[in-house]
Length: 294
Image (cartoon, rainbow, N blue to C red; front, top):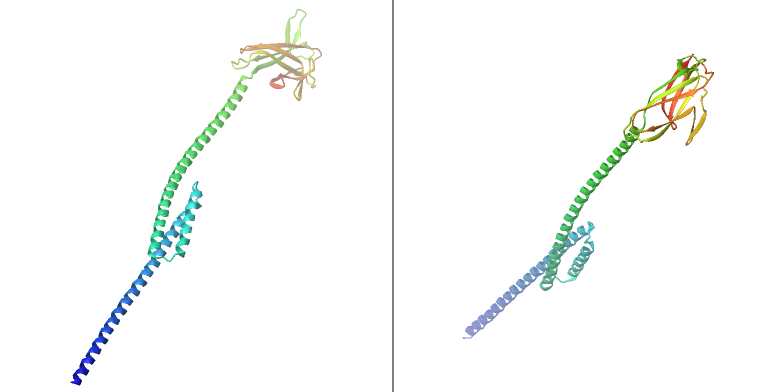
């Protein structure tokens, strides 16, 4: 009877111990599961924090690149970048729990949306600047072409003016000089003998010129004998820093038509040898010839 009681007590103890063991094992299992879940949650929160930080770093890098381009929106870009930097600093200090991470992610999304909006504005500005640059280049090309055309016109006008000026000058042609003996009857007899000559007859033609100025024209005639003496009046006229000694002057009324000019230079005791005759328009030599007296 006592043995039966002992066995019953032993079974009861074993049962209690088994229940306690089972309870312990269940508690250990629950504790292990919670620990693993907590570790997983912590790792997950850490990974999510790192991901948000990475996203913020990329956002900051985007702003840095945009600011470096020195656009007209630089001040606004710098202000937005500072918001990103401050959020990164706050996130690094946070414990990274689910509630705080939700807040940080929401703030990041807001900053990202703002960044995309600013980047779109920058692209629009870039396009406008490119169009303005293209227009400016086109305007510059047109301006350069206009300037070149103007220079060409100025050059052509200068050449035309020179041509007109040159063309408007009167031409003195057919300059001739001959010696004559004056008879008592007044008749002139040509001679090539120095001792017989009484007068030198100088003649020339002023050619027709439709673009020359009309009016009185004065020519200075210079006759130089074989001993380099200027014959006639031997008067001197000054033109600027130049002077001219001449034998006589002749004036004509020019009206764009051919004019024949003839003048006599009287003298005596003419020298033998070669004579030189020069016709000047002021100080410009316009015609010359020579002749010889024996």
